[in-house]
Length: 443
Image (cartoon, rainbow, N blue to C red; front, side, top):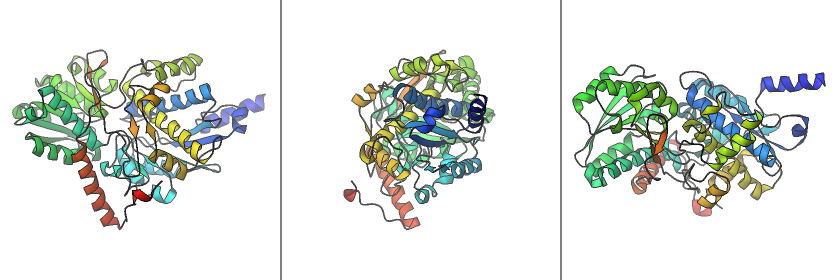
């Protein structure tokens, strides 16, 4: 028994596994490499997202014995949200024993760019939910990249759509002035093409104002905003720059109710440090906060009640970042189910099989309700040409203690966004000498 305990301790020290004990080691296992970030300036996002994802896999192992009897196992690699470390983790996680990693999801646009051209050669799908290059939604050019739920371009369009609703119609945006406060890194600039086209379409003006990373000094920017006197501020920031923005806005007299953020600025960790300055702030979300979802309650009952939860602070279960991670886990597990249905139940799938499953994944409202995730995420339907699958975003407002939903799922301007996606993807294909797939020939 002492030897057995020592062996298990050694395994736990080297890697984080979803299946524990010798019995699980003898069963079929599905390996996943997770490039997480639990330290550094963006640790709040990393611990929440990857904690929620891991807890969902623990739930599937506990409640169902895995996916069709295949236990879920995983190994983490700390990236610190650093691009170079992320690429190192990609290489380190590519294989575990004789199993290939079947999905790489760094939850970082920079790391996504860093491995972008590696995944086709290694045949490992790149999952970039809500991040990365928006033109990768065109699966004809980017067959191994999946910017699912809502790309930055769809998110930007949904934000403008939400502002149009607040004004009483999109035509009411004509003549409005909108300041775009962005963190000066790749994700902060990604929404610009859509915002520029929508400004031209609806007649509003934008002024883009950069914040140097990490964003803990913004006095000059908010003085510029006060002089500009905009109708709204769109906040494209992350980490410490979010509460800094809200506190500085309050000091300069700009109301939080007129600030609308993207999904990187809409977590509890973004508003609680800002105190009263955050009350009324609105942010986009495609995995809203809350514990009223059946799947979150199952995690509380079957994982945390047994002391097996990944979060050091169980109070974060149901938070925005955490629920976002559960959404990642749902997509991963549902794709595994679909791959097994096509390629054989009861055995691990390959990266190529996972790619097929992601491309054919459909999660309608009926299926979301069946897995306890109704309202936790929008319905999805991917295809050979469409690797986004939704584009919908809903908005929630901070009331001082919790996030409150203030909209239904808002559709992006699909025609405008898709035309931009295809235009950009075609330019990339021409530059790289890529012949786009003919989706009519894909099964």
